Length: 109
Length: 114
Image (cartoon, rainbow over all chains, first blue to last red; front, top):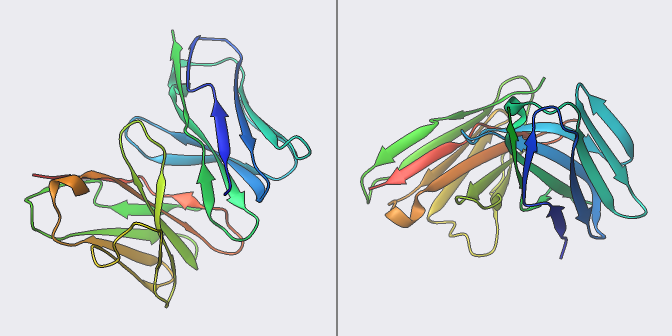
């Protein structure tokens, strides 16, 4: 069974802090999605990566295939970054996603 | 970028009624659409995978007669919750992809059954 484990479950930071969310995954997963879910429920896909590193604005995602580990970093965090961040592994055998439990991020002003 | 539109965003109805939720891919042809259910403070749970023109594949434990999925075109899939009861109240999210796109998610539908 494919598994995705995410940590921490909850994270509170002060505005401006550097934030890291971690994700470990099992064999059978070929790529990782990082998703952002706002309080209203809508989900935005931030990154999909199968190797290396991607950057978009203040967000950086990295993946280490050998260690089966990915991280999402937020630089200069802002209260508007407050949301649930979810890592999801795409199964090698198809397009199904296996979801982590999510990280509730709260950035205080 | 690719956009997936889901409608309605919020619905309240009486127990016993049927509710239809639409999921549309707005600027790409979605060969595959996914329907998820999410309970409060929990992650998404895949209900079914639907490919255009064929029957949906349901996950174990999901009643296909309860949750009817139709994917009649490359841009539209519908989920109908039949004879809804309070325990069906939940947040339902669709996503869509084609061979070139990763999954793009709709904004979800919050369903409340009274």
